[in-house]
Image (cartoon, rainbow, N blue to C red; front, side):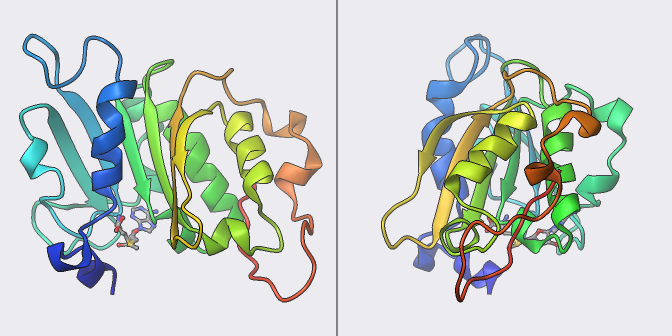
Length: 208
Ligand SMILES: C[S@@+](CC[C@H](N)C(=O)[O-])C[C@H]1O[C@@H](n2cnc3c(N)ncnc32)[C@H](O)[C@@H]1O
């Protein structure tokens, strides 16, 4: 269904949102203009190999997925990428509709922490897209808690899009907040589930 959703007849993939935002938030040495360097992008959870091909003059994309559907998509678990080799390697990391596919709340938090350490600091950008229900109708996560989690992992939200009635929430986060605290220093509401809303809700959570 995700692949069908990426078709042009369905309005295309979420990468259009990122492409729209990117030029305004890139550091001055990167981008489309002559003399600037290409953006080094890691696309996690790539369903198609060519999402960023139209922008190849200024974006160098590396698409990865747990289960590659194409020879140009590297079969790789993001959680198992070499932390030393990838440290501060990337200008942009896209986690578009990926975190909600990860079964464990702690692994979702680990994805955020890894993304922070893999991004160039302080200019690196993480593109995060989540189904709106993960934030708007979860027992354990709301917009405020998501903001706190992102801040605790060393991100500052620079722009977000959350249309009323929209199915997806998009955020662009910069890796310029202080580097993540030691896990033992984190407040317990970020490391264990806390009910934020009662009633008939889903159980989506992100934990550090
Ligand atoms: C909904 S699909 C991706 C959608 C696409 N990125 C988009 O925005 O439309 C989620 C993808 O994330 C991949 N994925 C989940 N966990 C992953 C991990 N740890 N490392 C790499 N890919 C992962 C899944 O294999 C799946 O192909």
